[in-house]
Amino acid sequence: MKKSAIYKRLGLLLCIGILGILWNCKSTDITDDENYTADISKLEILLEKDTYYINIDTALPFVTAATQQVANALFLSRTGNTASRIDVMGDGHFITIQNDSVKGDLPFFGERRLSAGPYGGRNGGIAFEGLPSNYEKNLNKKKRKLKIKFTISQNGEPSEHYEVNLNIFPNKNATININSTFKTNMGYTGTLSAEQ
View 1 (cartoon, rainbow, N blue to C red):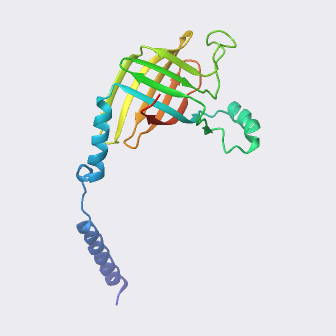
View 2: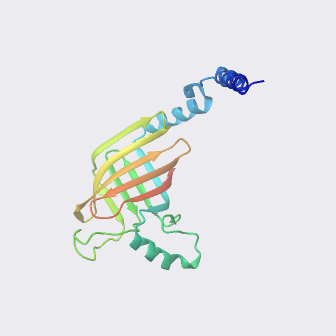
View 3: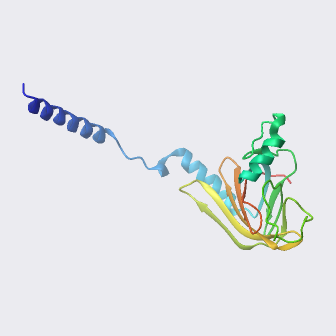
């Protein structure tokens, strides 16, 4: 048999195989999934609430060369922490949203620019309390999460502003990202709680 005839037959078999695979594949609509429906139902209930309390479990600093050097020196004690993930569970850090006001006490691990407020500021962490601006709350059905965004200032330092992006998932886990005017960005994970 000639090589060209063999290549034609192999090409034909390959085309038939691909068509067979495509024929057997079927599109699934995620909105028909029972888990999806249950998740969206939980999120819709959360969307209607006016009060949220989140216990912070983990701090996720933005790692720069300087913070990496400091963290390497601090974490030599084999705590299980790394420069990019620090366990703060049980330390009392939180975010509370109640009606139209927010309050937060979060640890900060990172760099602060010297032009930010008074040198040697009163609070090394991220602390805020009051009425936020640009408050938004919406449900992202595709990503199965409740998204809350707002802007607020550091307690005692009105020039330090935070853009807070909070995501709450159906299993009551939460992720928080905070962009700051003068501090490096921080991320956190936490758990939605009924208690304060």
